Length: 214
Image 1 (cartoon, rainbow, N blue to C red):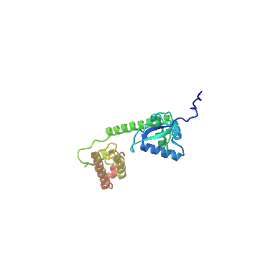
Image 2 (spheres, one colour; image 1 turned 30 degrees about the vertical axis):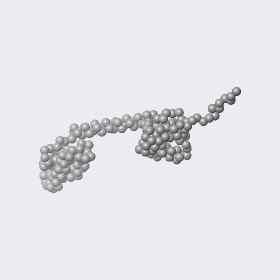
Image 3 (tube, rainbow, N blue to C red; image 1 turned 90 degrees about the horizontal axis):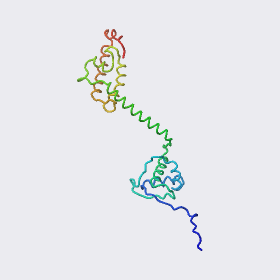
Image 4 (tube, rainbow, N blue to C red; image 1 turned 90 degrees about the vertical axis):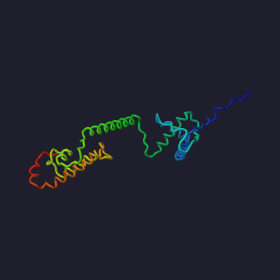
């Protein structure tokens, strides 16, 4: 009579999974830094792997490799995803957020993006249309800056209004980027500053300065 096979005491067979060579090196480095083997690192990573994580794949910039992961019964893809999550979380700046918080943040970003587009469209509708040619009349320059007339401002108000409008129309960084508008803003600023300086001390200016302010 033959003795029964003693299989219950045998350890489960180890397995390897295909992965990228750079990925394998990073996993081995992380396991060594934590003072554990890859199987223990994987066991912990499988508990933390987020749903919908991206599989790093079978190959990366350093080529292909295989990684011994012990006796896990998870799929190859699930193992790669879990270990990729462990590598990401090893970053000192990484944070784990509940799914609800992540969804709230994503919704907030989407809302901000929508509001930014709405603001840009509103500014486009409200912004002035460039006049023909250069700004040469004080009245036109005052209107461009939103002043009621050419007597209701001083030099500080002109410069402050220019600083408010320039970021809107700057041709490289403005929300309503327009080189022609920006050029006319500069012309208007220079004309209004010259206007203030040349007539500020005159009786006409002092008499008319009581008009409505911007």
